[in-house]
Image 1 (tube, helix red, strand yellow):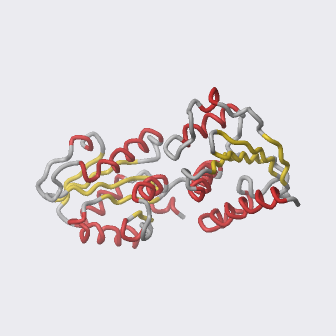
Image 2 (image 1 turned 90 degrees about the vertical axis):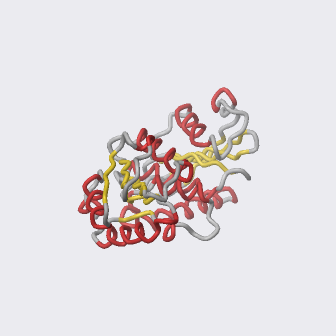
Image 3 (image 1 turned 120 degrees about the horizontal axis):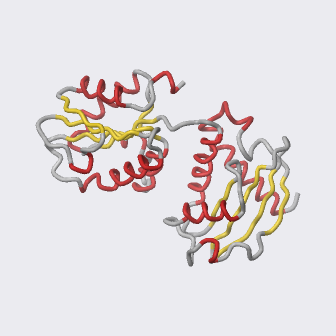
Length: 267
């Protein structure tokens, strides 16, 4: 095995460790990890492009060929591949090369976190494997932490998985990336609105992400607003599910009723 093959094997080993951590029981049949792989390598404007094709045979053997000049501006429609446009560019490359859902396109550059590339590949392959996001993203203001913490504890006690910042955010993590990752793993977001809520700016990014997820997964993602006390529902959230509550038990009940999944679907 030459140096490049060792590199490809190392990349797939890293991917395998991430998949194994999240979906160990599915590992045997996971795309790219259970087949021979065709590897195409190229670059564009300072970004290395790795294309892994799921060939279908059992043993993981790598077959390499170059992309050459196939990937050019007429294909990607940008001057440079960045962390902001990479998903759109990835889609264009997949369409241009007629790639399957089991295949993968990874970008490597100083501007693109490579670990995140593995994570995005896993999210793509989760769809192939029929795995649906099942977390509940809890969005709140710091002043409401105790109330939301208790709801979080109750949700987990009856079998639900949650994204709650003080448990799900690692120290030093990039806030926006962590939020995007949280939404991708979730089947719903719950916004807690209380008298401390003065305007929509503090959760503006989270609302934007929530609306995008709802557009992309209309049947699989729900936006839920829990209004605690005497305060109005923010206009931007008023067209989605919202309920007035006065206690944590009422909040828990309304959240569970509005979820697109039930607790038995998680197991």
